[in-house]
Image (cartoon, rainbow, N blue to C red):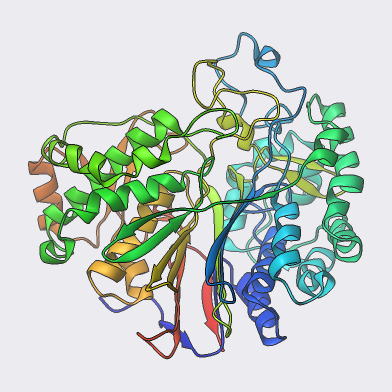
Length: 530
């Protein structure tokens, strides 16, 4: 199949994001002599303005960073905990934490402090230069994209219920049309303060205002919750796949699910099966089910509960269970419904440093609550907590929620080979697997791998039960073969937005003189290099 757009190849640096203005800001940082971390911060700040339904400084972030100097992969947890006063008694008599409104905004935003840690260790350009584009787009206005206009229309009632959100995102009570100018003056001032005073200013001055607004609206976060928060460096988790070292973020990230799927597929010759066989897709489906069962049983904040990663990732575990799962195709795994609005940013610089940054508000526009004084829209990640005290992801003060956010990286002979990730809750481990198998097992370039027909198993937000979706660009024989095996597969159009918005960079190395970047046709992004 001809790729949806040209595969981007360049020698000195590469970026790929889910928004063209985000990619432009990241490329500018590289051209000015910035590192891959600098480029990622520039992209994240810009996209927090121009892609407000997917990403914002009121959300969380996780990083994988390959440092060429030390030849190590570093992981950074920029996820915020539940507030100190947030307990299950606040939701007594309710089946779940509300997904929208001030009572959904119960975790501290961690993204901005993760920028601080990453920049202190691996940045080069000053923060005011990295945030310059974002400040300009917020102050002077940025064009509303087709996707953003559609999401504002879809969430109109939620946005209208909050004075801060309605004032920014609704024009005379309606969604702005594509191409309209969206100004966010208060957010511009907050970003200017972060640029001038450093990221901790978000947790002092902005945090005070946000906590006061939430209190007035019936929320629970306090000023001290913001003051006490700090992102932290953590150890990445890893496994082997086809001779590559595959890295992911540790819990509370669901990165372990991506590694579990690869462990399952390691025992199957996907290259021999080929991309157009029902057996190829059956292996992906059953690997996903097996991994989700393990994830849902254990995933939580490891500071509050044990996650037995060593046992889960042991090759002996999957070797003992693989055949049974491959044969029993009617076995289902019903996971909790999760949000799907996230963005993934990947960058690489000439020195060989590489970054995979995933940042999110959780749902589209998060809690749909925006502090008017700071212009900060707050995430609703805390709504994923369980109110069941026996659940591993049970709500407790100071606890981080299990997170759908994950970022993938492959190393070949100790050198970074592929940086990859996606938007989309349950989609993320599946879209990442689609990329790895297409590139490693089937020999595709990254853009063709992104364009290939994608599967989605599980339950997304709004679904009553599991669905199994496959894009119609797959051959009809695949649909027939999967149904014969008992899979209730549904065909959806290609490209389909529920399949995630993924980006990837294949690094330059002994295998190629050039970086190779791709961005998902299912989104509004682009890969750029120089």
